[in-house]
Image (cartoon, rainbow, N blue to C red):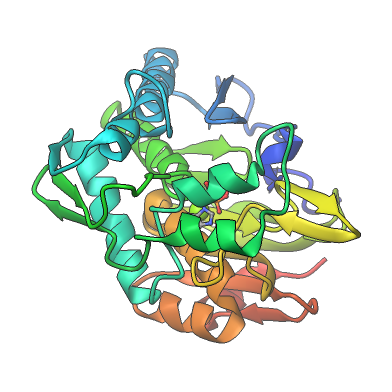
Length: 332
Ligand code: ADP
Ligand code: MG
């Protein structure tokens, strides 16, 4: 098979399986591959032809991801997101959390509120990632949306202010991307020039794969295990949001975890949205935002950013792909 070498199959976070197939190049090249369960998914860091000291750098990259997870999870004693939720007024946070919120607010504004980090109460109400998800009553949804909107958080340096004291912060659509960025930065600073940080299909590739780009497979949203497309890319992050990742069914309806903040119900315009961007945090936020906005507004949103491309599968299965990605994609 022509493509069986350097192949990454993107998987939904829920599948957790590491379908990363590698065969490393020339004899004598030592590669480092490490896996840890982090941020609700299996994270795999791969450094082919690793320079000495790489194993230590990989350990530090994982430790950093764990630190980011602690800071940005919705609850827990070390969580700054939880501290913001609990705060009644402005609160000082670390530079990482402030940076993530500032970036998320930019996406929130440019998406007209399609992206919203203030949906914590709504998420709890639906219980989507719990053992007992349910379809809430319309009045419960309206009440959970009170105080949310495209301006619901503000940053001023490291200070964060909620527009409504009831706002519950949920960084679930951006924190994983930021953690990937931090891991990649540690690897780069340690002299690693080629690597993949793959968090359950959301990933950053450092450098290229030697004399060729990395080949990144994107999962088909309706055919688990099948490929929708393969992207050939270098030095970039690729993040996918899909309605097949986390969902439950009730009365024959599928309810997934990507909410349209304007209605409080799961967004219905897309099956999946893959974003390619210079940073994984940006790709993560934009994947969620463009998924919610759907083909027209979603792809228009990506155009607001430089070096950002995307591939969207609409609700009816139609594929939309941005201009700059067309020469980098292959169909199965
Ligand atoms: P995943 O992390 O599951 O791969 P996403 O990056 O798209 O997928 O993040 C989904 C999570 O983001 C949800 O579980 C929820 O916590 C949060 N979320 C849901 N809808 C939105 C939205 N419209 N804007 C911002 N965050 C959202
Ligand atoms: Mg996201």
